[in-house]
Image (cartoon, rainbow, N blue to C red):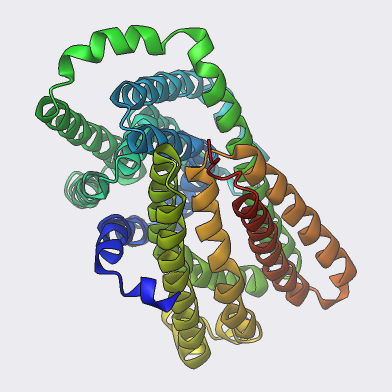
Length: 447
């Protein structure tokens, strides 16, 4: 088993996907920090509050539509493994068509969606700023959703460099325009929203240039028109709709858990909800690192299924599993040694620091149980088994509710116990399905 870990060709293949995505993921929290810092230096707290509320709503919408990337990665990887260029183009055009359709729906619904902000407990000034941000930011939907598809397509072809440069380029443009629009032109909240819209379209422009370059190099650009027409036939969309439906429901369950944690934590007091927000950053760091392995698992699993190469899949997953174990232990030990120092770095409020200190022990456990869920998610996304992802997430959600209900008297400790149980159930249920399918040759059939 450990001998496979020192297989340099396997390490190179996995690193070529995982490392670029980990590096590009670092741009995401950096952009959030710049947005917060720019808004935080304006002359009124309503701007910072409005951006926090408006960006949360936008993030939720786009997170629920992240199935566009996941499904495209899995389907493209399988076509790539089977050396089926026509299939790869079909999945690209179908994904783009679906992304633009969803973007049109969001733009048509922006007015009623904006009204939902009035149901929050925010002050009228913050609500006004949130709506201002939302109504500008929503116009990035066509570019952002299309970018999800293109990123998935590049990852499915094991071309993580293009996906990396898309993220780095668009986030860099966003940061620069944030500073220019707010500090120089004094556009305040609309300036921050406009910067994101322009950056997403700039990222789309770069992605289109990548596609043109790769299709010219492989001499398939002349097939685009024929493939586009064929891919738009309604019957061709059925597998994509089915897969996206299941991944959407899976994402909805996942988001429901974190929304519940936010609202239930608020019931325990202002210091508790603030401490929980700080502590969730611990999990966010784990997810950024493990996403690189998950992306590699998606691409490699899909390719192995397309090639019907069971040995390649097993060898690759052994290496990925060992890296997953190493990273989870590193995070756990880091949180054990410097957990409180990390809390103090994220907040200078003594009351919040003291409250967060009560729950740092859960952060030590969380990487050990959560990391496997990310890796196994990647495997089943690559296998395009949306039903498995959906059903195991349902099981984990039920477990979360049961655990919190049983230990409810522990208050905030019950929330963190339930979250650890939720992640553990995701990992265990997905692992059981994986080994069962591997044993009975269902993941990659023999014929």
